[in-house]
Length: 361
Ligand code: DAH
Image (tube, rainbow, N blue to C red):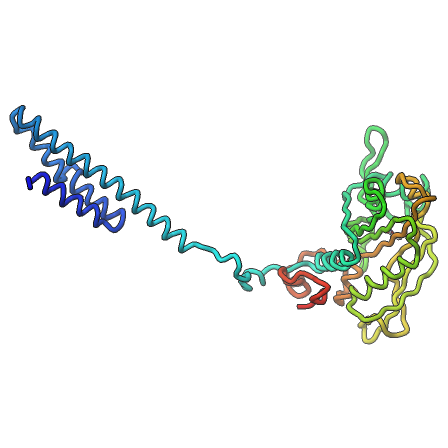
């Protein structure tokens, strides 16, 4: 074996033996670097006769090419092995349960929890969720809901109005979730069965009122929906929500422009030592407003009252949360105090389900 082919064999053996990119680089510098063994051979050509230079030069260049090729190949192989090792090390098992440490940092606000509970309860009864914008037209918030123009009932709501537009129309922050009823009737064909949870606004502030609060509206429209259905739905809802075996309700006549007849509903309860319990006792607590959808509202929403009838109700979500979870001051809900949220909030991965008991830990 000539010196040159021996040198080539030894360099190629070193290339093959290089275990990582750093040692491969050392082999490369030792062979092809300025002072490398192959470079030294090339430098020696200058002292040779032209004929020798021709034949030796060709051989040396072949060695150089072979070495460079082997190094490039080895580098690619080492890169691939390194990548595979990294990927194997970083593999995630997505089937593992979430680590409690991270999940325990955040808390679900009681309002969000109650909204999730409502969604679970009403989904079980075949209701879907309808939504509408917080900034509403006067038409949807009042007119289509049978509030006559300039009727004092519009003032009852302490409305936040925006500046009128060029046509003198004022948008407003919706004062209740009832405009979502209108949107549902205008866009869905009966039978309609929706709940509409969301933010509502009135110019009002004390221990039990904040300028922004939450309501959930319920609406059923079909050919033969009647008050018996409404009563059953409300009973089922309150039993599931307050997690009691039975509730008794009292329906009192009331007035809302968009329902006829209109009623307010009280739940039987006991109040002992500041604690309210449902399904027992001799006290009553007013909980929601409801009624049969007024024929004018059906008409305003393109439905024929001779063919369809329906019922609706509206409940304060904040009030439901205060009653269920014993929260005394509504204002604390919106102060964004992390200590309060840590105390009253819910773990993010405990979704409310009927099977689990809605608020079970
Ligand atoms: N929108 C009413 C309010 O904010 C609540 C209400 C009462 C809604 C009766 C209804 C209903 O759908 O039928 O005071």
